[in-house]
Image 1 (cartoon, rainbow, N blue to C red):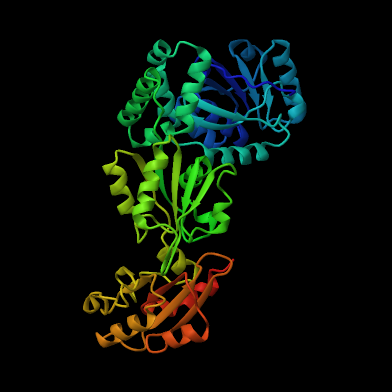
Image 2 (image 1 turned 180 degrees about the horizontal axis):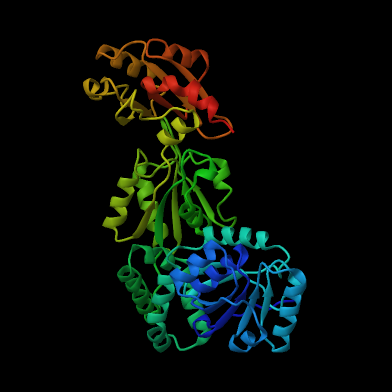
Length: 461
Protein backbone atom coordinates (compact mmCIF):
# COMPACT_ATOMS: atom_id res chain seq x y z
CA UNK A 1 0.00 0.00 0.00
CA UNK A 2 1.74 3.13 -1.26
CA UNK A 3 -1.02 5.57 -0.27
CA UNK A 4 -2.93 5.74 3.00
CA UNK A 5 -6.61 6.81 3.14
CA UNK A 6 -7.47 9.43 5.73
CA UNK A 7 -10.71 11.28 6.46
CA UNK A 8 -10.20 15.01 6.95
CA UNK A 9 -12.62 17.28 8.80
CA UNK A 10 -13.41 19.25 5.68
CA UNK A 11 -15.63 21.89 7.30
CA UNK A 12 -12.53 23.31 8.98
CA UNK A 13 -10.27 23.05 5.92
CA UNK A 14 -9.36 25.71 3.36
CA UNK A 15 -8.82 24.58 -0.22
CA UNK A 16 -7.09 26.51 -2.98
CA UNK A 17 -7.99 25.59 -6.55
CA UNK A 18 -5.61 26.97 -9.16
CA UNK A 19 -7.23 26.94 -12.59
CA UNK A 20 -10.50 27.91 -14.18
CA UNK A 21 -11.54 25.17 -16.62
CA UNK A 22 -13.78 22.12 -16.52
CA UNK A 23 -11.42 20.07 -14.34
CA UNK A 24 -11.20 22.85 -11.79
CA UNK A 25 -15.01 23.09 -11.83
CA UNK A 26 -15.40 19.37 -11.13
CA UNK A 27 -13.02 19.51 -8.17
CA UNK A 28 -14.69 22.66 -6.86
CA UNK A 29 -18.07 20.92 -6.91
CA UNK A 30 -16.69 17.93 -5.04
CA UNK A 31 -14.95 20.02 -2.37
CA UNK A 32 -17.99 22.26 -2.02
CA UNK A 33 -20.15 19.22 -1.29
CA UNK A 34 -17.75 18.42 1.55
CA UNK A 35 -18.11 22.01 2.82
CA UNK A 36 -14.52 23.10 2.31
CA UNK A 37 -13.83 26.83 2.34
CA UNK A 38 -12.76 27.26 -1.28
CA UNK A 39 -10.75 29.87 -3.12
CA UNK A 40 -10.60 29.82 -6.92
CA UNK A 41 -7.43 31.38 -8.34
CA UNK A 42 -8.21 32.05 -12.00
CA UNK A 43 -8.20 35.20 -14.10
CA UNK A 44 -10.84 33.96 -16.53
CA UNK A 45 -12.83 31.04 -15.10
CA UNK A 46 -15.15 29.21 -17.50
CA UNK A 47 -18.88 30.00 -17.49
CA UNK A 48 -19.75 26.87 -15.49
CA UNK A 49 -17.20 27.73 -12.80
CA UNK A 50 -18.40 31.36 -12.70
CA UNK A 51 -21.91 30.10 -12.05
CA UNK A 52 -20.69 27.81 -9.26
CA UNK A 53 -18.71 30.65 -7.68
CA UNK A 54 -21.84 32.76 -7.61
CA UNK A 55 -24.27 30.07 -6.48
CA UNK A 56 -22.03 28.55 -3.78
CA UNK A 57 -20.44 31.81 -2.64
CA UNK A 58 -16.88 30.64 -3.32
CA UNK A 59 -13.96 33.02 -2.94
CA UNK A 60 -12.57 34.17 -6.29
CA UNK A 61 -9.05 35.51 -6.68
CA UNK A 62 -9.54 37.23 -10.04
CA UNK A 63 -5.88 38.18 -10.50
CA UNK A 64 -5.03 34.48 -10.60
CA UNK A 65 -2.39 32.56 -8.69
CA UNK A 66 0.47 34.07 -6.71
CA UNK A 67 2.66 32.20 -4.16
CA UNK A 68 1.41 34.09 -1.09
CA UNK A 69 -1.99 32.37 -1.53
CA UNK A 70 -0.48 29.06 -0.45
CA UNK A 71 0.12 30.26 3.12
CA UNK A 72 -3.61 30.90 3.55
CA UNK A 73 -4.76 27.37 2.69
CA UNK A 74 -4.58 23.78 3.91
CA UNK A 75 -4.47 21.96 0.58
CA UNK A 76 -4.00 22.80 -3.08
CA UNK A 77 -5.62 21.52 -6.27
CA UNK A 78 -4.08 22.45 -9.61
CA UNK A 79 -6.14 21.93 -12.76
CA UNK A 80 -6.31 23.15 -16.35
CA UNK A 81 -2.78 24.56 -16.07
CA UNK A 82 0.17 23.97 -18.42
CA UNK A 83 2.50 21.21 -17.19
CA UNK A 84 5.53 23.40 -16.49
CA UNK A 85 3.51 25.95 -14.54
CA UNK A 86 1.64 23.22 -12.66
CA UNK A 87 4.93 21.56 -11.67
CA UNK A 88 6.28 24.90 -10.39
CA UNK A 89 3.17 25.56 -8.26
CA UNK A 90 3.22 21.99 -6.94
CA UNK A 91 6.86 22.38 -5.90
CA UNK A 92 6.06 25.62 -4.05
CA UNK A 93 3.16 23.90 -2.26
CA UNK A 94 5.26 20.90 -1.23
CA UNK A 95 7.89 23.25 0.19
CA UNK A 96 5.21 24.40 2.63
CA UNK A 97 4.14 20.78 3.31
CA UNK A 98 0.73 21.39 1.74
CA UNK A 99 -1.14 18.36 0.37
CA UNK A 100 -1.17 18.89 -3.40
CA UNK A 101 -3.13 17.37 -6.24
CA UNK A 102 -2.37 18.09 -9.88
CA UNK A 103 -5.24 16.76 -11.95
CA UNK A 104 -4.22 14.03 -14.42
CA UNK A 105 -0.56 14.21 -13.40
CA UNK A 106 -0.04 11.57 -10.68
CA UNK A 107 3.73 12.10 -10.46
CA UNK A 108 3.16 15.67 -9.20
CA UNK A 109 0.59 14.69 -6.57
CA UNK A 110 1.07 14.20 -2.85
CA UNK A 111 -2.59 13.21 -2.44
CA UNK A 112 -5.23 11.76 -4.75
CA UNK A 113 -8.96 12.22 -4.98
CA UNK A 114 -11.02 9.11 -4.40
CA UNK A 115 -14.29 7.88 -5.82
CA UNK A 116 -16.73 8.39 -2.96
CA UNK A 117 -19.80 6.50 -1.80
CA UNK A 118 -21.54 9.06 0.40
CA UNK A 119 -23.93 7.73 3.04
CA UNK A 120 -22.89 10.35 5.59
CA UNK A 121 -21.83 9.82 8.29
CA UNK A 122 -20.69 6.59 6.60
CA UNK A 123 -18.31 7.32 3.74
CA UNK A 124 -16.52 4.84 1.49
CA UNK A 125 -13.53 6.04 -0.52
CA UNK A 126 -11.97 4.11 -3.42
CA UNK A 127 -8.56 5.16 -4.65
CA UNK A 128 -6.28 4.06 -7.47
CA UNK A 129 -3.19 6.16 -6.63
CA UNK A 130 -4.10 8.25 -9.64
CA UNK A 131 -3.47 5.35 -12.02
CA UNK A 132 -7.04 4.58 -13.03
CA UNK A 133 -9.78 6.96 -11.81
CA UNK A 134 -12.25 5.33 -14.20
CA UNK A 135 -11.69 1.94 -12.55
CA UNK A 136 -12.16 3.53 -9.12
CA UNK A 137 -15.51 4.96 -10.25
CA UNK A 138 -16.49 1.54 -11.61
CA UNK A 139 -15.75 -0.04 -8.23
CA UNK A 140 -17.74 2.72 -6.55
CA UNK A 141 -20.81 1.92 -8.67
CA UNK A 142 -20.54 -1.74 -7.74
CA UNK A 143 -20.32 -0.87 -4.04
CA UNK A 144 -23.27 1.53 -4.37
CA UNK A 145 -25.53 -1.37 -5.37
CA UNK A 146 -24.52 -3.40 -2.31
CA UNK A 147 -25.09 -0.77 0.35
CA UNK A 148 -28.56 0.13 1.62
CA UNK A 149 -29.70 3.67 0.92
CA UNK A 150 -30.64 4.06 4.60
CA UNK A 151 -27.06 3.60 5.82
CA UNK A 152 -27.05 7.14 7.22
CA UNK A 153 -30.10 6.43 9.39
CA UNK A 154 -28.56 3.13 10.44
CA UNK A 155 -25.45 4.94 11.68
CA UNK A 156 -27.57 7.42 13.63
CA UNK A 157 -29.58 4.59 15.19
CA UNK A 158 -26.43 2.80 16.33
CA UNK A 159 -25.13 6.05 17.81
CA UNK A 160 -28.38 6.45 19.78
CA UNK A 161 -28.03 2.98 21.26
CA UNK A 162 -24.29 3.04 21.90
CA UNK A 163 -24.52 3.88 25.60
CA UNK A 164 -27.44 1.52 26.44
CA UNK A 165 -25.64 -1.34 24.68
CA UNK A 166 -22.42 -0.55 26.53
CA UNK A 167 -24.25 -0.74 29.86
CA UNK A 168 -25.76 -4.16 29.17
CA UNK A 169 -22.94 -5.64 27.05
CA UNK A 170 -19.78 -4.61 28.95
CA UNK A 171 -17.17 -6.46 26.87
CA UNK A 172 -15.94 -4.82 23.66
CA UNK A 173 -15.68 -8.23 21.98
CA UNK A 174 -19.24 -9.11 22.98
CA UNK A 175 -20.50 -5.73 21.77
CA UNK A 176 -18.89 -6.42 18.42
CA UNK A 177 -20.70 -9.77 18.24
CA UNK A 178 -23.96 -8.17 19.37
CA UNK A 179 -23.92 -5.49 16.66
CA UNK A 180 -22.66 -7.85 13.96
CA UNK A 181 -25.50 -10.26 14.68
CA UNK A 182 -28.03 -7.45 14.25
CA UNK A 183 -26.36 -6.08 11.13
CA UNK A 184 -26.10 -9.51 9.54
CA UNK A 185 -29.74 -10.19 10.32
CA UNK A 186 -32.49 -7.62 10.21
CA UNK A 187 -31.31 -4.19 11.28
CA UNK A 188 -30.45 -2.76 7.83
CA UNK A 189 -33.83 -3.87 6.50
CA UNK A 190 -35.84 -2.86 9.55
CA UNK A 191 -34.49 0.69 9.41
CA UNK A 192 -36.27 1.04 6.07
CA UNK A 193 -39.57 0.26 7.77
CA UNK A 194 -39.00 3.16 10.16
CA UNK A 195 -36.76 4.26 12.99
CA UNK A 196 -39.32 3.22 15.60
CA UNK A 197 -39.41 -0.36 14.36
CA UNK A 198 -35.61 -0.52 14.17
CA UNK A 199 -35.27 0.97 17.66
CA UNK A 200 -37.61 -1.69 18.96
CA UNK A 201 -35.52 -4.40 17.30
CA UNK A 202 -32.37 -3.22 19.11
CA UNK A 203 -34.23 -3.00 22.43
CA UNK A 204 -35.63 -6.50 21.96
CA UNK A 205 -32.18 -7.82 21.12
CA UNK A 206 -30.82 -6.26 24.31
CA UNK A 207 -33.61 -7.83 26.36
CA UNK A 208 -32.92 -11.21 24.71
CA UNK A 209 -29.21 -10.81 25.40
CA UNK A 210 -29.83 -10.00 29.06
CA UNK A 211 -32.20 -12.97 29.37
CA UNK A 212 -29.90 -15.16 27.23
CA UNK A 213 -32.75 -15.84 24.78
CA UNK A 214 -32.09 -16.73 21.14
CA UNK A 215 -32.87 -13.94 18.66
CA UNK A 216 -35.80 -14.63 16.36
CA UNK A 217 -35.33 -14.45 12.62
CA UNK A 218 -37.13 -12.74 9.76
CA UNK A 219 -38.89 -14.06 6.66
CA UNK A 220 -38.42 -12.22 3.37
CA UNK A 221 -40.92 -12.90 0.60
CA UNK A 222 -38.84 -12.09 -2.48
CA UNK A 223 -40.06 -11.84 -6.04
CA UNK A 224 -37.39 -13.17 -8.38
CA UNK A 225 -39.07 -11.93 -11.54
CA UNK A 226 -39.69 -14.01 -14.67
CA UNK A 227 -36.22 -15.57 -14.83
CA UNK A 228 -33.59 -13.18 -16.18
CA UNK A 229 -31.28 -12.46 -13.20
CA UNK A 230 -30.66 -8.94 -14.53
CA UNK A 231 -34.31 -8.15 -13.76
CA UNK A 232 -33.86 -8.70 -10.01
CA UNK A 233 -34.21 -5.56 -7.95
CA UNK A 234 -31.08 -4.40 -6.14
CA UNK A 235 -32.82 -5.08 -2.82
CA UNK A 236 -33.89 -8.58 -3.87
CA UNK A 237 -30.32 -9.46 -4.84
CA UNK A 238 -28.96 -8.19 -1.53
CA UNK A 239 -31.51 -10.15 0.51
CA UNK A 240 -30.95 -13.34 -1.50
CA UNK A 241 -27.21 -13.15 -0.88
CA UNK A 242 -27.75 -12.73 2.87
CA UNK A 243 -30.17 -15.63 3.36
CA UNK A 244 -29.46 -18.49 5.75
CA UNK A 245 -32.29 -20.54 4.22
CA UNK A 246 -33.90 -20.23 0.77
CA UNK A 247 -37.37 -21.74 0.37
CA UNK A 248 -37.90 -21.63 -3.39
CA UNK A 249 -40.44 -22.44 -6.09
CA UNK A 250 -39.84 -24.35 -9.32
CA UNK A 251 -40.32 -21.18 -11.40
CA UNK A 252 -37.19 -19.57 -9.94
CA UNK A 253 -34.53 -19.83 -12.65
CA UNK A 254 -31.26 -21.70 -12.16
CA UNK A 255 -29.35 -18.47 -12.91
CA UNK A 256 -31.01 -16.75 -9.98
CA UNK A 257 -30.48 -19.71 -7.67
CA UNK A 258 -26.75 -19.47 -8.39
CA UNK A 259 -26.76 -16.01 -6.78
CA UNK A 260 -27.59 -17.41 -3.33
CA UNK A 261 -24.95 -18.04 -0.68
CA UNK A 262 -23.14 -21.31 -1.22
CA UNK A 263 -23.60 -22.27 2.41
CA UNK A 264 -27.31 -21.41 2.52
CA UNK A 265 -29.79 -24.23 3.11
CA UNK A 266 -31.98 -24.84 0.02
CA UNK A 267 -35.54 -26.14 0.37
CA UNK A 268 -37.53 -26.85 -2.79
CA UNK A 269 -41.28 -26.44 -2.29
CA UNK A 270 -42.15 -26.13 -5.98
CA UNK A 271 -45.52 -27.16 -7.33
CA UNK A 272 -46.55 -28.60 -10.65
CA UNK A 273 -50.06 -29.50 -11.71
CA UNK A 274 -51.15 -32.44 -9.60
CA UNK A 275 -47.80 -32.66 -7.82
CA UNK A 276 -47.17 -30.48 -4.78
CA UNK A 277 -43.74 -31.02 -3.23
CA UNK A 278 -45.16 -29.46 -0.06
CA UNK A 279 -48.79 -28.35 0.48
CA UNK A 280 -49.28 -24.62 1.04
CA UNK A 281 -50.27 -25.06 4.68
CA UNK A 282 -47.01 -26.90 5.37
CA UNK A 283 -45.02 -24.21 3.55
CA UNK A 284 -46.59 -21.61 5.84
CA UNK A 285 -45.66 -23.64 8.92
CA UNK A 286 -42.14 -24.24 7.60
CA UNK A 287 -41.53 -20.49 7.30
CA UNK A 288 -42.63 -19.96 10.89
CA UNK A 289 -40.48 -22.84 12.14
CA UNK A 290 -37.33 -21.63 10.37
CA UNK A 291 -37.76 -18.05 11.57
CA UNK A 292 -38.04 -19.23 15.18
CA UNK A 293 -34.64 -20.81 14.79
CA UNK A 294 -33.24 -17.29 14.42
CA UNK A 295 -32.58 -17.67 10.70
CA UNK A 296 -32.86 -15.22 7.82
CA UNK A 297 -35.39 -16.98 5.64
CA UNK A 298 -35.95 -16.05 2.01
CA UNK A 299 -39.18 -17.30 0.48
CA UNK A 300 -38.13 -17.02 -3.16
CA UNK A 301 -40.90 -16.90 -5.73
CA UNK A 302 -41.07 -16.50 -9.48
CA UNK A 303 -42.53 -13.19 -10.62
CA UNK A 304 -44.06 -11.14 -7.81
CA UNK A 305 -45.10 -12.65 -4.44
CA UNK A 306 -48.47 -10.90 -4.47
CA UNK A 307 -49.53 -11.73 -8.05
CA UNK A 308 -50.71 -15.35 -8.13
CA UNK A 309 -47.81 -16.21 -5.83
CA UNK A 310 -49.87 -17.00 -2.71
CA UNK A 311 -47.75 -14.50 -0.85
CA UNK A 312 -50.83 -13.08 0.84
CA UNK A 313 -51.62 -16.44 2.43
CA UNK A 314 -48.08 -16.78 3.74
CA UNK A 315 -48.09 -13.26 5.14
CA UNK A 316 -51.35 -13.93 6.98
CA UNK A 317 -49.76 -16.96 8.67
CA UNK A 318 -46.64 -14.97 9.61
CA UNK A 319 -48.78 -12.18 11.07
CA UNK A 320 -50.83 -14.64 13.08
CA UNK A 321 -47.66 -16.24 14.49
CA UNK A 322 -45.98 -12.91 15.26
CA UNK A 323 -43.09 -13.47 12.82
CA UNK A 324 -41.24 -10.48 11.41
CA UNK A 325 -41.41 -10.33 7.62
CA UNK A 326 -40.82 -8.14 4.60
CA UNK A 327 -42.14 -8.42 1.06
CA UNK A 328 -39.76 -7.50 -1.78
CA UNK A 329 -41.70 -7.14 -5.05
CA UNK A 330 -40.51 -8.57 -8.33
CA UNK A 331 -41.28 -8.02 -11.99
CA UNK A 332 -44.35 -10.09 -12.64
CA UNK A 333 -44.38 -12.61 -15.49
CA UNK A 334 -46.94 -10.59 -17.46
CA UNK A 335 -44.66 -7.57 -17.63
CA UNK A 336 -41.50 -9.56 -18.32
CA UNK A 337 -43.09 -11.76 -20.99
CA UNK A 338 -44.79 -8.96 -22.87
CA UNK A 339 -41.79 -6.65 -22.78
CA UNK A 340 -39.28 -9.23 -23.98
CA UNK A 341 -41.65 -10.16 -26.83
CA UNK A 342 -42.36 -6.58 -27.87
CA UNK A 343 -46.01 -6.66 -26.76
CA UNK A 344 -47.09 -3.53 -24.85
CA UNK A 345 -49.80 -4.49 -22.37
CA UNK A 346 -51.51 -1.13 -22.91
CA UNK A 347 -51.53 1.05 -26.01
CA UNK A 348 -53.74 4.03 -26.88
CA UNK A 349 -54.76 2.46 -30.18
CA UNK A 350 -55.33 -1.05 -28.83
CA UNK A 351 -55.96 -1.42 -25.09
CA UNK A 352 -56.79 1.01 -22.31
CA UNK A 353 -56.69 -1.62 -19.56
CA UNK A 354 -55.01 -4.90 -18.72
CA UNK A 355 -56.40 -7.74 -16.61
CA UNK A 356 -54.39 -10.50 -14.97
CA UNK A 357 -56.35 -13.75 -14.73
CA UNK A 358 -55.62 -17.16 -13.24
CA UNK A 359 -56.19 -19.91 -15.77
CA UNK A 360 -55.69 -22.71 -13.27
CA UNK A 361 -58.24 -25.46 -13.59
CA UNK A 362 -60.08 -26.70 -10.51
CA UNK A 363 -61.89 -30.03 -10.95
CA UNK A 364 -61.53 -29.54 -14.70
CA UNK A 365 -63.54 -26.31 -14.50
CA UNK A 366 -62.58 -22.69 -15.12
CA UNK A 367 -65.31 -20.51 -13.67
CA UNK A 368 -64.53 -16.89 -14.57
CA UNK A 369 -66.56 -13.77 -15.28
CA UNK A 370 -66.38 -14.29 -19.02
CA UNK A 371 -68.68 -11.39 -19.92
CA UNK A 372 -66.31 -8.95 -18.25
CA UNK A 373 -63.25 -10.54 -19.82
CA UNK A 374 -64.59 -10.63 -23.38
CA UNK A 375 -64.63 -6.85 -23.72
CA UNK A 376 -62.91 -4.79 -26.45
CA UNK A 377 -59.95 -2.45 -25.90
CA UNK A 378 -58.31 -4.43 -23.13
CA UNK A 379 -55.50 -6.95 -22.76
CA UNK A 380 -55.94 -10.25 -20.94
CA UNK A 381 -53.02 -12.11 -19.42
CA UNK A 382 -53.68 -15.65 -18.22
CA UNK A 383 -51.31 -17.21 -15.70
CA UNK A 384 -51.13 -21.01 -15.34
CA UNK A 385 -53.59 -21.37 -18.20
CA UNK A 386 -51.91 -23.57 -20.77
CA UNK A 387 -53.91 -26.70 -19.90
CA UNK A 388 -57.11 -24.65 -19.94
CA UNK A 389 -56.28 -22.91 -23.23
CA UNK A 390 -59.06 -24.66 -25.23
CA UNK A 391 -61.60 -23.63 -22.60
CA UNK A 392 -60.30 -20.04 -22.50
CA UNK A 393 -60.43 -19.65 -26.28
CA UNK A 394 -63.89 -21.22 -26.50
CA UNK A 395 -65.44 -19.17 -23.69
CA UNK A 396 -64.05 -15.83 -24.89
CA UNK A 397 -65.50 -16.44 -28.35
CA UNK A 398 -68.79 -17.63 -26.89
CA UNK A 399 -69.08 -14.37 -24.96
CA UNK A 400 -68.50 -12.11 -27.93
CA UNK A 401 -64.76 -11.79 -28.49
CA UNK A 402 -63.95 -12.01 -32.23
CA UNK A 403 -62.42 -15.30 -33.32
CA UNK A 404 -59.53 -13.51 -35.05
CA UNK A 405 -58.42 -11.77 -31.84
CA UNK A 406 -54.61 -12.18 -31.65
CA UNK A 407 -53.24 -14.50 -28.94
CA UNK A 408 -49.63 -15.03 -27.86
CA UNK A 409 -48.11 -17.89 -25.91
CA UNK A 410 -44.79 -17.11 -24.22
CA UNK A 411 -42.68 -19.98 -22.88
CA UNK A 412 -40.02 -19.32 -20.22
CA UNK A 413 -40.10 -15.59 -20.78
CA UNK A 414 -36.86 -13.57 -20.44
CA UNK A 415 -34.73 -16.73 -20.34
CA UNK A 416 -32.44 -18.04 -23.09
CA UNK A 417 -35.05 -20.74 -23.88
CA UNK A 418 -37.83 -18.17 -24.44
CA UNK A 419 -40.27 -19.06 -27.24
CA UNK A 420 -43.11 -17.01 -28.69
CA UNK A 421 -46.08 -18.46 -30.54
CA UNK A 422 -48.70 -16.12 -32.07
CA UNK A 423 -52.12 -17.18 -33.31
CA UNK A 424 -55.81 -16.31 -32.97
CA UNK A 425 -58.56 -17.40 -30.62
CA UNK A 426 -59.89 -19.85 -33.20
CA UNK A 427 -56.57 -21.68 -33.78
CA UNK A 428 -54.27 -21.04 -30.80
CA UNK A 429 -55.15 -24.33 -29.02
CA UNK A 430 -54.31 -26.31 -32.15
CA UNK A 431 -51.07 -24.35 -32.67
CA UNK A 432 -50.10 -25.02 -29.07
CA UNK A 433 -50.34 -28.77 -29.64
CA UNK A 434 -48.57 -28.63 -33.01
CA UNK A 435 -45.63 -26.67 -31.57
CA UNK A 436 -45.61 -28.70 -28.34
CA UNK A 437 -45.79 -25.72 -26.04
CA UNK A 438 -45.41 -26.64 -22.37
CA UNK A 439 -45.49 -24.90 -19.02
CA UNK A 440 -44.41 -22.47 -17.80
CA UNK A 441 -46.15 -20.44 -20.49
CA UNK A 442 -48.15 -17.23 -20.31
CA UNK A 443 -51.17 -16.43 -22.49
CA UNK A 444 -51.67 -12.88 -23.77
CA UNK A 445 -54.95 -12.05 -25.50
CA UNK A 446 -55.72 -8.80 -27.31
CA UNK A 447 -54.91 -6.69 -30.34
CA UNK A 448 -51.64 -5.55 -28.72
CA UNK A 449 -50.26 -8.97 -29.69
CA UNK A 450 -50.27 -7.78 -33.30
CA UNK A 451 -47.40 -5.42 -32.40
CA UNK A 452 -45.06 -8.27 -31.47
CA UNK A 453 -43.44 -8.54 -34.92
CA UNK A 454 -43.00 -4.77 -35.25
CA UNK A 455 -41.75 -3.89 -31.76
CA UNK A 456 -40.17 -7.21 -30.82
CA UNK A 457 -37.77 -7.33 -33.75
CA UNK A 458 -36.82 -3.67 -33.37
CA UNK A 459 -36.06 -4.03 -29.66
CA UNK A 460 -33.56 -6.89 -30.02
CA UNK A 461 -30.02 -5.88 -29.08
